[in-house]
Image 1 (cartoon, rainbow, N blue to C red):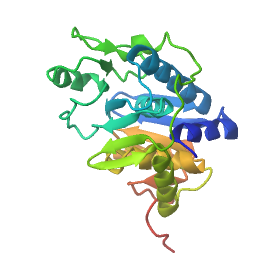
Image 2 (cartoon, helix red, strand yellow):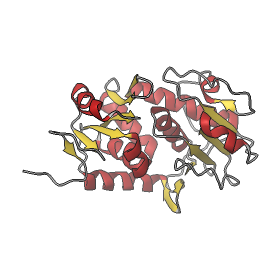
Image 3 (tube, one colour):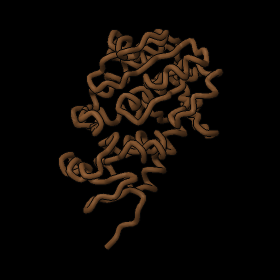
Image 4 (cartoon, rainbow, N blue to C red):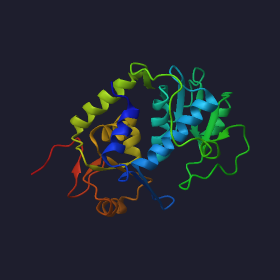
Amino acid sequence: MTTPADLLGRALRRDAAAPLVTQYDDATGERVELSGTTLANWVAKTANLLQDEFDVGPGSRVAVALPVHWQTAAVLLAVWSCGATVVDTAAEDDGGLDDVDVVLAAQDRVPAIEEQGVDDLLGLSLHPLGLGMTGYAGSARDFALEVRVHGDHFAPYAPVEPDALGLRVAGLELTLTGLVAAAEQLADRLGVRDGDRVLITEDSAAEAGPVVWLLAPLAVGASLVVCRHPASDQLKRRADAEGVTATLGVGLDGIRELGRPATS
């Protein structure tokens, strides 16, 4: 039975050197591009960090309080590689963290989470070069500093159970294999195709959720162009430069919009 970690493995076997996730941020001017190999390296390091430092494995619950971001993609795939459950708090709701084992949060959300008395907390600066948090003096551990010392290859200590819970968000629960099945169904429904280069904006991806913005493209062999804080006048130029073949949640002239019927 296929799990989310297997989807990344498929991408590596297909073309490990090809761009898999490319991210723009118009608020900072950054552009970050990750091949399948580079993303897999981040996933392995993150999974090793979670397993070795926080005992994350099957049955563990990991809260993810992160925006749509390439580092979020690595974190999600790492949690699933450990066979653990992602508790998605991306909707800016930091309540209900009493029953989780570890929290990974964007730096701007760390103080509010610390007030809940969370013991195992990793803060992410989300810096484009992978640098650590600045101007922070709390007790949270710094993801960027911690992750770099961990291994480039990951093997779970305990076998991953495909039928174990993989995602809990807004009352919805999906197993690890259920995540893949849902991703494949959504890819088919939206019209994502093998080889597509899919442009998504931060807002549309956050609304759709990680099964749509991350797993559905992976499930069918597509790659991603993520636009954070997008300047509307830049999107078409970005799409042309990146060879975008489809968009999600944004209409651009001459490019197929996923989930919308074709027009003649």
